[in-house]
Image 1 (cartoon, one colour):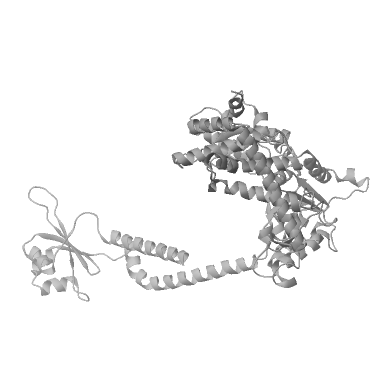
Image 2: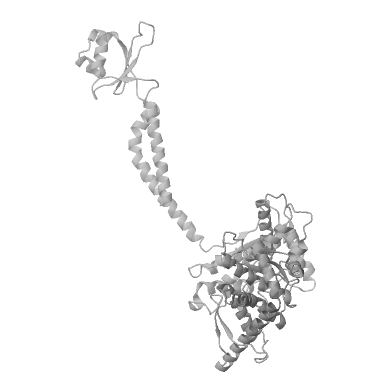
Length: 608
């Protein structure tokens, strides 16, 4: 409807322009007065008129020059239709002698004005009807073309657009992953080297990793390094509401790739279409399962002679169909872990390239404080640091900008406008001081880097604890230390104010979750032993854990609850014991926080 209104407006403007054109040509240049035929007769009888020009039904009367030498005037008039101009003037009393002495000439109508005036009223209805039919057929043609292309491939060919190409050198870390991918690229460049030993090209490579670990970035590098056609498509682009469309798009995508083989097809977020069959709604004939069946056939069906490699990425390998994961389809499953300490430093260097950076910057310190950060988190960290430097009107990015950005990425921006009352500020200060004091007192706890009672994100205050090294395993003493640190804020409020507030609610929730996992999943209970309790039920078509089924008796459930309570109680007793023992230091740290709101040199304060 909007398009039709647009075309109607165009037609209206064109007609308006034509009307203006007609008026322009019909109106002579210069000012011409219009007079009646009676006035024309008076001018003839008075001897003022010297020439009459007849053009159709119009009369143009020109008078003699004035006595002062100025040119005479022109007047316009209209004669009676169907009667000659001379006869009309004589009937109105014009002097025949004076009329005969005048110059009377006739001019035929011609030119653009005549053509428009005489043909436009006749042609306009036909033009409007023709325009309506043209518009209808154009829309119908567009709709038919769209219908024919509905099942066509949505895959796009990766081409260079003049920007800097991403190569394997731009992907920091992931050494083993890049080696696996580079082998496939080498195979495409020099297949004879592999054929000598009977090696065949992998049919598919599945990149598995948490969000932000660099799966899509690695695919971009492959696209620029392989020197073969690289087609990319999202898994969700195969799925439509009509059954069979997705399967047709899969066929069309692989047909396109086979025509330019050897080639690579990259399917991002393949879990959108590759989920476990038989678990969704609609039985075996729903659209997703039809599409998955076609992918299985194309990857390793009856005819698989063409050298088409499928590169796919997902962060949910647990919900993919087993037939999709078997060798012969996805021969390689490559795991992308979160970057290590050294890898984080290399990633930071890449993201800081081309940016003005202070000479004394220490990326190793930044990488040490970003344990658990993915590549995307580090890219965001550098960007936030640059924005912070601009906000402070700096000429370069400093170490302090990067360290402040760590807190922003982890916790959110500072909310200094979220002002606390004097009492709330005091409670928050003792709460955070309790966390920090316990973390500093327990050898198995991570070191404290900063304490603040300035709100960030949804937290009223925070104690920033960061591990000094990357950890992949966690022991029971470390969990117990973490529980004591979590409950230290609650314990500090209880000791100092003889009551607790809602500020400890999140700490209690996290502590309860850790204690239950220690008892039911990690086998850290001496009474329960090395047994896991509870079976997780997951709806595959939702990709989400729905519930945990109880595979133990009510008596065992009681034992589990007792163990969870014991872990929490022991941690709380230890927290209260240390805080009571170091109550003077607790008051000292809390009072400093009330004054300064932020304390970076926490360990120096303990030694003072």
